[in-house]
Image 1 (cartoon, rainbow, N blue to C red):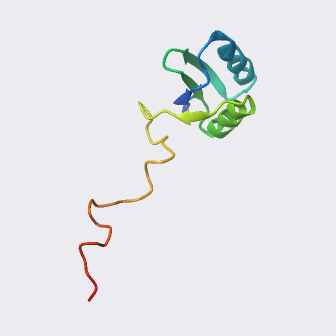
Image 2 (image 1 turned 90 degrees about the vertical axis):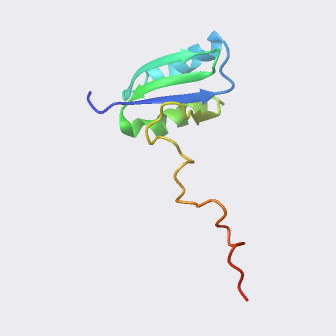
Length: 99
């Protein structure tokens, strides 16, 4: 299906084939998950999925007692923390005395 998204997810608890098998079994049941790539050394799971499937994928990982974090590497707008708004350095109000 066109429009699929590739998301790298860091899972610090994923470091052996047992965790990979648990995750693969859980996510392979999800219709919107197209493929998975596991890098156990870097503890990163890369999932190709439908755009609306990210939250269900993260929820499925949490249901296995993992703590998934979106990896920053090649994410194109997928970061959950980076876009809080513009912030100029040194503009915390200390340079503009009131009085």
